[in-house]
Length: 562
Image 1: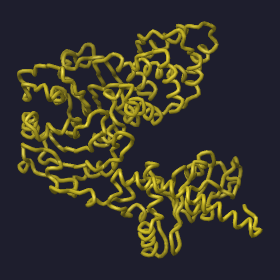
Image 2: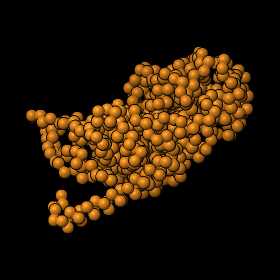
Image 3: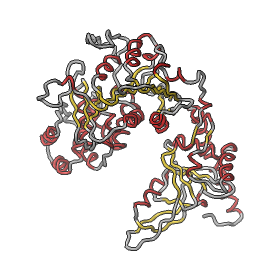
Image 4: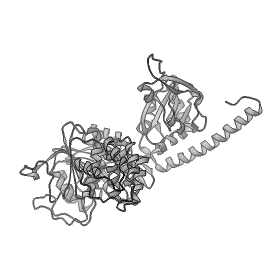
């Protein structure tokens, strides 16, 4: 992502419009991936970019109406672009950074947070050969989460802004979507052109639909006379988009709306229609402050035909504070609750007859005073991966590669473990790369009377460091949580909690025990995480002082310092 940002920032020097800058960044990246074209561009002696660049874009159905500044050194950009390995994760990180973190660029209205996109994909339960529709697709940020299905489904997206569609088309090409149709259209006037000879495009429906509607106060639309949501209210700009999408899905649709539509008069007509038509399957109440410059509360509506019951999930406390905004977490838990429709402290399944039409907010149907301290904070929810170290057996006729063996002796007492002493040659196997530790991995001794804990430092990123068979590796999803978890394990409370697990399991610990471990109830609190991280850095500093003092004593006494 670093190189992509460099390209973006370089082009930004020559173009004021950030949509143009983003579009050019992706187009140059696309051109750079073509070895023949990039080679031709680099040997060109003209200052202006050769016509072959534009022909290449036109060949891929990109209109390219941006006049490239002649002072821009296109060869410099191509050199950077041709060496990049493009994948969905890198592109997603890039789009999320420039759209939702660098809000000064004012692109945040045209992208959805990655966590929401991922959750929507899971809730839609996408199947092979299904058609998927994304009205108001913006820059195509949802396609990044959809990339896992790019060979299996048909994708259709529209937006009223030509520049956004150009960006989305380029993203789809970079992700190698085989059956992706993106068009500029006003969804309230035009309909997606799927077949030129189709007589009635208005009847076109899709298996799955996702829409994150813009909150535009100037739409001033008149609802069709036959619409059950007529007349539209200017203060509820989501309703025209929802009204349109209601006629476009067969199996399932997901909408992002403001929560005020679920319990205030402006959403009364919408609530009555959704309940009376039995198409409202689930409502998920989201944390606040997860959309830049939108401080209100938001929900996900999950729509499907012929429901007898409605499922409510209150996910308001499922967040981490990242910079100015919050980030949705516990996606697996939300998806699991939705799939099995379990009644818990944060979820409830109700018959339609029990629904109060005046309030559809999930928090209304939970216990009236749900405190975050009552929610069980399970360690497994924060882990991306948990695995045991193992021996890599020598194999004949295999290429050998240099590695470091990591044992408990390499654990730093109070601080990051950055030094690994045992160097050996190992067979260059796929398993070797799967087992290597990464920065901010937390390590636990698997056996013993008392637990031993370490956190891996940044030096491991440049090496292949393999944990031995007596070590359990915890890969935490977020470095902030990883540092907080390491500090907690070393506190008296955390040490006792870990020790009890060892004692209850014949002086050992495994993946199951770790994933089921309960953390302090306030662990979900963003302020607690900040406090843990401040203590982590203080602990590191004091640990370095202790280490230096021990080395000084050893030197004084005449011992060799390794």
